[in-house]
Amino acid sequence: MKKYLFILAVLALVVMISGCTTTSTINTKNFSTSGMSFQYPDTWNVSSQVTNNSTQIMVASSEFISSNATKGSMVLILKIPKSGDNNMSQTRQELMTQAQQSGQNATNATINIAGVTASDISYTGKDTTGNNTYGRLIDFEKNDSLYLLLFASGGGADINAAKPYFDVIVKSFKVE
Image 1 (spheres, rainbow, N blue to C red):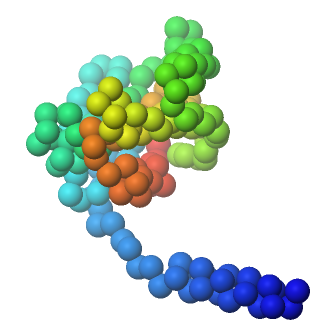
Image 2: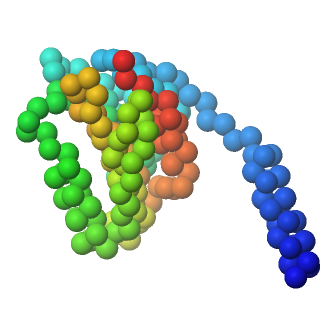
């Protein structure tokens, strides 16, 4: 029994040390428009379109842009006025149902973002050519607006490499 405890203690120490020695950082740039601000990977491109009542922002990897959106990772951020027609609970349920019916692994959780609790749905699966795909939808309401952050990666892109880039945006996302 003592032998197993010693082995477990050594394994725990190795995991803690290896976690502490990782110094992976992602260089970022700042973006701000329409009362929203966030950081994004400096190797990615950002574009936005602001109309009278809504804002659309796209943040995309160079791989996504160079492949004409067939491979890579991207984030689409929407800010629209809250109205009675915006029923995100129904949209969330439809997304979960479609993901599960198509055999994708879907999760439904909540996350704290921009000072509020938001819905956080993610899924992984395969596209029609067998490539791994990843999607994530974060949505919340604040200041009479509805915010949607859609993260997507696919077409043979390295999904696990994209997730830390997505996290940069999520962790830094702010709303005035």
